[in-house]
Amino acid sequence: MKLLYNANIYTLDQSQPKAFAVLIDGERILAVGEKDTLEAMSHGRVEKQDMQGKTILPGLTDAHFHFQHYALSLKKIDCETKTKEECLRRVAERVKRAKPGEWLLGHGWNHNEWLTSPSRRGVRGEDFDLPTADDLDVLVPNNPVYLTAKSLHAAWVNTSALNLVGITNDTPNPKDGIIQHDSTGCATGALLESAMSLVENIIPEPSVSEIANAIESAQPVLWKMGLTGVHDFDRRESFMALQQLHVQGRLKLRVNKNLPVDSLDHAFELGLQTGFGDDWLWIGSVKAFMDGALGSHTAAMFQPYLNEPENRGILNMDDEELFEYCRRAADVGLSMTVHAIGDRANHEVLDAYEQLRKYETEKGLPHLRHRVEHVQVLHPDDAPRFAQLNVIASMQPIHALSDMLAADRLWGECSALAYAWRTQLNYGASLAFGSDAPVESPNPFWGLHAALTRRRVDGTPSADGWYPEQKLTLAEALSAYTYGAAYAANAENRLGKLAQNYLADLIVLEQDIFSVDPGDLLAMNASAVMINGEWVLQ
Image (cartoon, rainbow, N blue to C red; front, side):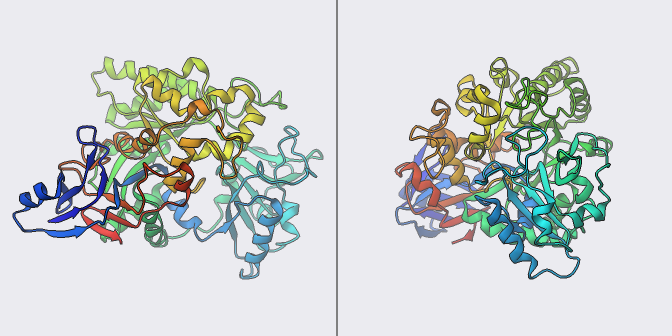
């Protein structure tokens, strides 16, 4: 047994919110409370550790994470810069070390943030200034370049990459995708949505073992951020890598694995159900996409984007098409989760879920825990429906800081219900918070800061924050990273609290998180992390 005492423990268990000691037996918590009481329970067979007044919290979970993409992104060119020039400088540095013909891969650019005067305009509105192949060709004429946007819904490539895949000025747009052209009809090197796969599909894929090694190397980075679990949204290769790590005893994070909708038929034939697995790796939901993203102007909206009267984004399917996926998943016992950014996309998903709830009732099926990923902007009529339908709002607070200026510019008054965490909580919906890493940093303390302040590090847009009525308290935001994430993963009976018989996943902080200024959250990290009753970071 282990007894951690002289600690400032926030259990996040409403029946016993504060404690000063925790007794751990193997991988589970035996009890929380006072040192003397717990020591008596151990009958002397205990390893005692004085925590010196440090703060202990339940381990935090990122409820929307791309494990393979994040782990591999740690080796890519970091394109998250304030200017296009700085991004290009980083590309130029990397090409110096590249072998002839080697692909240069990068991630994180956000043209909405680049502080450059627009010298080239996209064809879809004066605010839509995507980068071009010409920018890259000057620096990298021979090696193919593929740089994904921060949103993962757009890519920036050079002419070498376009030539390799055979994209010409006459190549038609694929379904649900756009090959951007300039005013003269020339392909610019910007690829949106499914058009990205035209290039992505020819980039040499890392092996499962290489992905597994990258994920293993990323684990300590995540522990330091206070993460003890993630909900993974990457695809087959990620699942295979996670299984390999698990079998070899190298998986040291809890992973709720979601499945792509194009694998639904295989899962149905196998009879795979939500929850199948163990405490380390288990099946979550089936993931579908309803629309695109704000940054690429492809989020499906009821009203046109400002200054783009013909553009209402891309709707991948309507509610009837989605319901057919939902019905098939429900028949075998799989919950659904759907990417929805724009207000029309969210509306269509909620309509499909309303049909699904009726179907579950009519067929005597369990009402599973269905989710919507992102919920970035809602029509006012749809705001109460998450609670009414018992649908989980899986949201990423840090997105609001990245997107606030673009949302105001592109969505205008609709932004009043953008990233509306308080609205959802007030209606009674369940919140699960994450990051969408590598779209954003997976650091949950940055997410907590965003939820509390709705203000960027530089103070933008004001001292009160962006639509300050949507801010949360620290307790509310922490709950979404702990119990809320556990509930969304059907694991609330073992994760998300420090309570009797819960798994011993906890983090140690040098400061009392409930006593610091919200700005101090940005520099906070875990000084120690325990997972399954064993210290993985000290």
